[in-house]
Amino acid sequence: QNLQETQDESAVFDDDNEPSTGLISLIRKNSLQAGIANDTTNTIVADDSTSYYSADDDTTTAGITSIPTITSANVEEEEVSYDNDDEMNMSILKSKLKHLFILSENGKPVFTRYGDEENLVTLMGVMQTLVSFSEVIASSQLNYIKAGRCRIAFLHKEPLIFVLISYINEHPMCLTQQLTYAYHQIISTLTLSRIKQKFTVQPNFDLRRWLSNAEKKLLYNIIDMYEHDLGMVMTCARCLVLAANVRTQIGQIVAQTIRGQKDMIFAIILAHNRLVSIARLKNYHLHPSDLYLLVNLVNSSEAFKGVESWVPVCLPRFDSGFVL
Image (tube, rainbow, N blue to C red; front, side, top):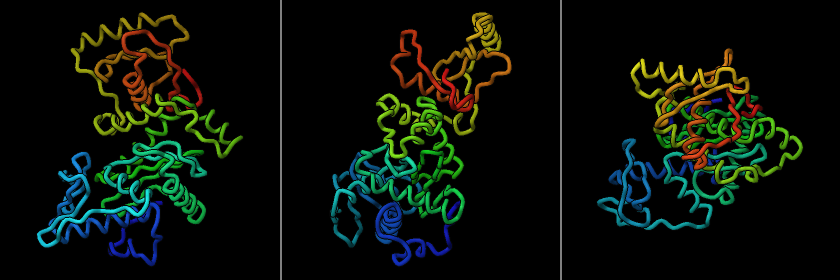
């Protein structure tokens, strides 16, 4: 259920109507800071490694000081102080234009794109509460929240919850699509049947035990790929530019190589993250989103560079519980 933005923006952040902590506090603080900046010179000065939105457009403004400050012609620079670690963590999160969170239905952290999951337990608990409240009270899933520049997309796939917070003007469908890629990336390595079986027996299971650095790297890279590959947005395979006769010859060679091998389902040739040729058994099809999971696997694994390797992988669009 999408929560639509009302005409009166101030009503969205009324202190009498909303709590002062957690995710809603993060949204409200962003809106208030944007309003303060608009009343001064619309410029936010920050550390070189941090980007902030200017108050009047969708561009970012990089600064030169080590502590975030708001400057104007009539107001002297004022240092931002933090009352506790939670507020400091919130400030770090607000400096990122896009953030991905993965948690279990019990609110236990699984993955965060930035920061440490242990320091975001309270925030993820608020996210889990929002999703559960919507499903219990409104009997429908919470999909999208828009508050000023902040856009929050939710995807509930039992037994996991995926949340994407973005300060980029992206369409809600694109945000949901990125969450779906993250969901498929997890089950491509762990398989959906295995995850469901474990959480059925042990609802409080910490899925981070199954996520090694290699699996986390895949999650980092799949979001980065989406931001730079238009093919993922359009859900289509991007092919390497080749002469038609050259591509035909390559396809014939691949088909002859796998002919008669009953255990071979797909044979794929990739170059520079682009599809060169694909051969498959009759009645079997490879979805473009599964192809991008394979591309991400090849790019993220050192095992595929220079040597022949065998790696089990699940293709969610092909079969979410079957490992190739």
